[in-house]
Image (cartoon, rainbow, N blue to C red; front, side):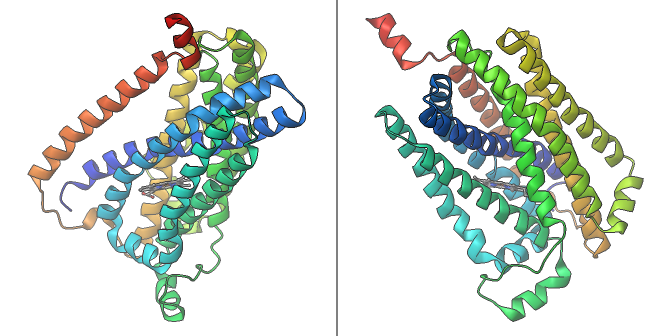
Length: 363
Ligand code: HEM
């Protein structure tokens, strides 16, 4: 290890939490954009049409966050769990490498959708295709991250097929894991719509629409997210459940996740009732609680992984340490600069006015 495990792990968990938030915003945002754009067309509903149009503008930006917040945790996972991750990605290499092309196709479709929108043409089918691709990419990630925990099937898989085109044998934890992420997307994207309803650049009607629909989505998503959390937990092997439950940290983290997820449901109910008249502090609270919920889920998930791998003879904390101070300092400085630039970009976006408004002012 080029740095102490606790340091690599902390950075990994921080950045992976942000990646998860971005993935959920994309997944949930695409689902909502697809449904609203279709309803806007079928029912000639002006609110659905306007709201889906606004979302279409945000989605390509969200993709950049998904990718840029995915690369650093990938590097950390490779350093921390290289033996397991490389083997797993090689065994399903064809699917793993296909993520790059799927991602490019999805990104292209999102830009094509905004172009069609600008020309007043239908674009719901592009949102649907992008959504299916993102669900597929999520499935490939979940498959890779579960296969890396199963050294017992690696040799047989490789013997059966060395071309990376074979799907791993059935794993009872895979479907719950993927569903967990999908339900998280409903909750987090719903919460994000509530936050979006606070932007004064939108008409009051649109703000109310965002708050009510976002609130409803969070209200429905939170119990589903909690239920899938328990599903994930109950499909783990008994030894892993026992070790995680006995650990000094993970039970408290699990409880924190449960409380945060439930709070998001309650905030959703409030937003549904009060619409955009929600106090700003509450909207900020929603954003913070959503990030905390993901951070707790990521830490708990990490516990499950460490306990599973320890039971199979790979103890992360026993790896030999050879500190590379130069690289660590350069990484630390770049990380701080990078996060500051991202914060600045978000602030600029938050202050930005729609093009139409600027043109009116100039006119
Ligand atoms: C639309 C694109 C993407 C989607 C939908 C997506 C989705 C996901 C999901 C669902 C997981 C959790 C899997 C599980 O544990 O069950 C995950 C984990 C992860 N993703 Fe992404 N992802 C995307 C793009 C990326 C990209 C481009 C990168 C990096 C280049 C990346 C890096 C990672 C890493 C490093 C992890 C977890 C590593 C670990 O377990 O420590 N993701 N992603």
